[in-house]
Length: 332
Image (cartoon, rainbow, N blue to C red; front, side):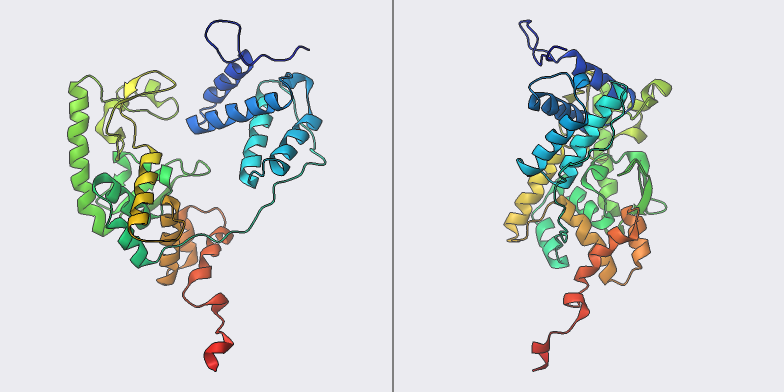
């Protein structure tokens, strides 16, 4: 079978038919845009690694070689290696209609047990002081609710219940929904923020925009839902953008990189030397709840962890020293 060409002979480079089919298969299954980009990247890398041979003429040995290369030569993390494997399995199962057997001899990337970086309450406060506007409210909400970065960015207006002081997090990690609290100290600021967002949405409607991306097939099932107030993002982007899939001009949520950049700068200005990221606020949320005496099962539900073992990693910073043991030097 001939080698697969990654660039056509036409004047403008285009993706090969195989990758186009892979993209279509991903979209039919309603996988996220981030998953689409990751899968297409790893399928392409797999083909290039084997000299542009067609995947149909390759199998377990070639998959083993590529994944081992990632672990040994490129030193990728276990999660990255697993993502590459998932992409390749998706290719074989859904496009080539072929099951892959045991991957004997595969060198797995070494998994290291890393304790999460946690900020003290004073450090969180000192970082938030250096933030303004939507960035301040958003990052305070991450710390106050334990949401992941993308869970917070994808919040819709209808998911905030001011009457019960709850926030419904839809389609979180593992495609699970869960409920977390709406912090009382942020309630008024969030309400004021939504008034501003509503004015922006009304202006977009007057400019013949105002629609928002809807998950799955809701846009076809409910044609008017995309312009309804309840479906708008709580933290919209300051500018309109073009949807890479549909080509529609609309207002998306804030870009994760802009929020990450703002928090990184705030951490620097606060003089915090810990390698803190937006996700550190989630770790701090969990740790501070446990320090405050809340039951670990409650924290598990708020975080959306499938197993309590995942939540127990936060018990390492309960202000009791190493495993609660008093150092002998303190008794001298």
